[in-house]
Image (cartoon, rainbow, N blue to C red; front, side):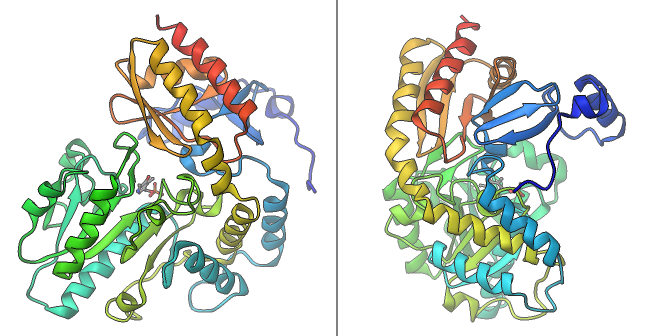
Length: 412
Ligand SMILES: *Cc1c(COP(=O)(O)O)cnc(C)c1O
């Protein structure tokens, strides 16, 4: 059920893309270098710009639109909630909060959840939980945190402090104190950073912005062991790799471990801005208490309706199973690219979270792809990143392959 018929923006306003871009750039704080495209609407795995040009989407709005665009069931739930109640604050309960909290604890395998408005805010909550726990154990012991090199946890001051890319942090010192950085997938390097007063280790199960690098089994399990032996908290950030993208609802579930704190966001609300941090029961009882933390919007009924819908729809449609089944098909295409082009050395990642390692400038490739009607992303300095909607079928991968070939041929 659509409440109104979509007409193309151009038909409604007669404006060219360039005019929207100029208008935005005259007013926006220039903190992003955007691609020169103005999106109007989406349907399934396609985006359309205001001129009506069609783009195959292999970016999902940075891993958010996991069920693609315009899903009728999801939209219907949101329309209904929009009419019923959008917001009431965390001073009260709503049925949607009850349902979403239950859905999230079930799907994450964690015991308690706190809803936030973004990924970075989920990281902030995770850090505060770890710090409060350490403080209760011993107020003088210190609250040091080990983070990983090339990690990405968000842009707020706390999240930035544990983000392992130097040039993101440098202009903003002094940041949060007591953070040191270890090599990802190198247990020795983590052990070398262990010292008195370390209260938490934070890492992504699959590094996203850092270049699509999955944690090895040995590494993730090794971190769990170190944390158990020393009473350190393990914070796992699945903001990008969680919610079905890996082929499991949460990627850590494939490693035979459970974190003490798990963060999620991006696809959690399928486009509604919502994140969460989840903790074990033990930790919930020995960390934050009323008065320690809060948020005005977090967990509002509209966001919660979106969360419950996204989890239910992903499970009903067996999305993780679909990702696992089609993952080899995706890989074969990427291997083909590595075989065919000298400037692509390899591919990596898991499920529908993939990177092509290239000597080309990834941003230039993404710009060229837009001209060919294809949306792709970049990661780090040498990776072309693809996070297609999890509803991609074989024919969508075939189209992706055709378009990638056209893009890469133009760089020969
Ligand atoms: C995107 C991302 C974040 C930050 O989320 P925001 O919603 O942009 O604040 C944190 N961690 C990881 C792994 C991410 O991919």
